[in-house]
Length: 247
Image 1 (cartoon, rainbow, N blue to C red):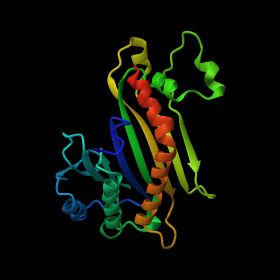
Image 2 (image 1 turned 180 degrees about the vertical axis):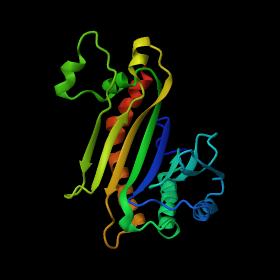
Image 3 (image 1 turned 90 degrees about the vertical axis):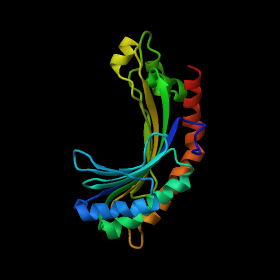
């Protein structure tokens, strides 16, 4: 059971390494890379290529808990849905970053951005935007606007990005993504969809001297875990969970 199972319906931790140069895509390199990952995680046995050329290795999704990795043209990704622990999924991400330099020729200079995302999904049938307003509220400047008689909220996705250093190369972003559209509000026909909260820590640009991808990941994971524990749980996740439960 994931550590946030009581706060949301699904929790996941994704790693994205965006590169300046294109990643290798020849048969031998790709297969060798994924075989090395599979050695650590034998249950990752579903390998395929998407139409646009992305290569994917993943576990079966039937149980709602699974690992996945991808190699795209200029992006290397890794993720796990409903991990047993944060440490478990971080170990997977570390393996990907340890393999990338010598199996995919990804130099620390080649880093456009390194992202670590903590995602929290709530399954909800209804107007996502309205429930976000009720749970998180509006800023004082928008309060009167939201109280307009007869009006319905059809888009409200609050977000904020913080720079964590003077040169703005390390950033942290909290955002809410709703999946309700105007047609659904107009007809009152709401499918069961995922309302998502994303907490992302990002390192921009080439890594500094002596900094590895693994050490950069350690810093980003520290940022994410501290932000989630200190701010996101009590101020975002629990209010959303309460608002949804009351509907």
